[in-house]
Length: 283
Image (cartoon, rainbow, N blue to C red; front, side):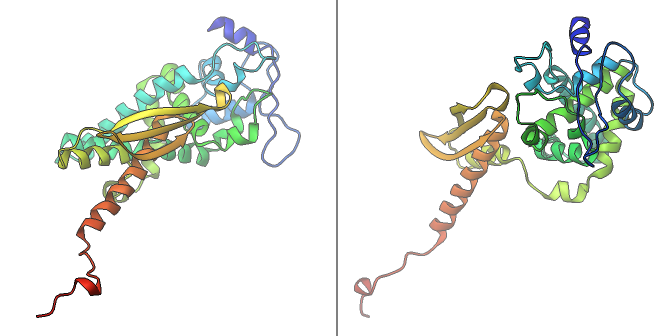
């Protein structure tokens, strides 16, 4: 990590503010405190200044930086994203466990998946304006990445992981409570259904069908902007196809399409067959 920090701080990152003026968000020429903009963000959202500047710079380093031929950076926010995902799961699980003492394991798991999903996390990230702090490879499509659901969700998770490493679980819990729990209508969460893969599993189990099988049939684009195409099948029949930058999201899209197909088929079986005039028999 120290080597990465030395390499990263040797660069100057210029990110214009939304207003379009010339003030930069990132400007690193050697070691020292965080840039003012990022330092101010951490101070606001993490209950005080950060203790470890490099961990927060890493949290905002998009993987396109490591694929940029002009960059010496060797580490992106993907490892922190992995950690932050686990921290989010823990905090949300703990909260739901306390909030819904009568709920069974399956219901708690389902409600958690509605909160900690890519779309929701991207929304939290967008509301905080985290895209403007992203460090993006010079050769990458910066506007596309800043509006990418995947990139926005990733930086929210990586920031959660950074706060956990820098300040501990209590600080990470406080961050999640303010930025996630504080912005959720739990009545809507409990009554809505976003986890299409869970719905599809429940559907197949209730009808004694084999479990759904997800297959990646294509992976296109640059390494940091790859688009995955996934098919979901059951008993050899393809029911849905989904595309996304993450395999898990593509699987969700495929499962949603599969549920639409299956719902329509169920509806068709309930419709009485229309009799043609020739088939009507006289009394």
